[in-house]
Image (tube, rainbow, N blue to C red; front, side):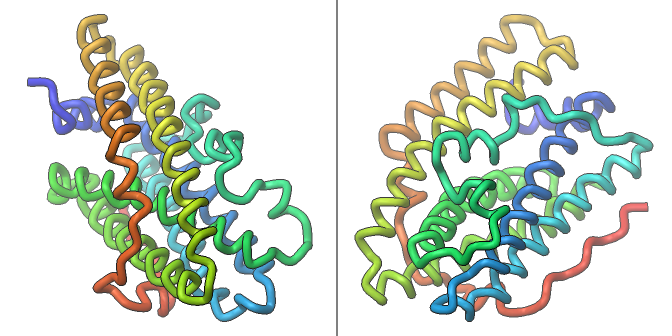
Amino acid sequence: MLSARSVFQEIVDSDDAYRLFCSIAASGESQGGWENGRIAALLPASQRELAPKVARHGADEDKHGRIFNALLRKRGLTPTDVPAETDYTMLLERRGIGLAHDKLRRDERLTDTDVITYLAHSRVTEQRASDQMVMLKTYFGDHPEVGKAIRMISQDEDNHLAYCHEELLRLARAGHGRAIQRILHDCALAEVGVYRDVSLAVMAHMGRILGWPAAKSRVLAAAIWGMYVYERAVGWRRMVTLRMPERRNALGGPATSAPEFA
């Protein structure tokens, strides 16, 4: 039976597919770590109290990158080049979503609008990350090779999402509500398109590596398109709502260290 569980199991069982999967994940997480580190350093004076949380966010993302690389080393594999069409972070940037890397490389203080843009972008992308990790935890949380990593990353992504909700609500109370909703809306609609494109690209690469028959690839592509149609119509709304999370001050402490996978 064709399902998310069976597809991921195929990926885990193949060294070449697993290598590509972990390489894509490690690259994206490492980019997120760098971005958050730069944002923490460039926050305006009005938002300096956010710096420890933004830095913690970056440290968590960097840790996730190390975890995926450790999973590769455990199997005796090395990272492979990430195809440009699977680079979720950079494709979002090209759509004008989030803070551009050129801006983050400059030693210029960010503005309050930049901070709202960062948090809104994170609220949308962390929703995606949290949903994906919940799915993986459901199917593979007890897997002897990847279960520990999935559980740890899932916990972190939930914390990141809670942090975004709490900080955006704080800024909304400070009078930025309309700007927040506008940026969230634009980001969510762009994200569902980028996620579709990246999903199609990743599945195409996996299909070639795993030798899937054309019919199987078409079914998976149709499923991805079906999800996109749903998200474009109504599913994007889950990415723009704000509610006070049960986990308050979720990034208020130090980052946890990456576990050993020897």
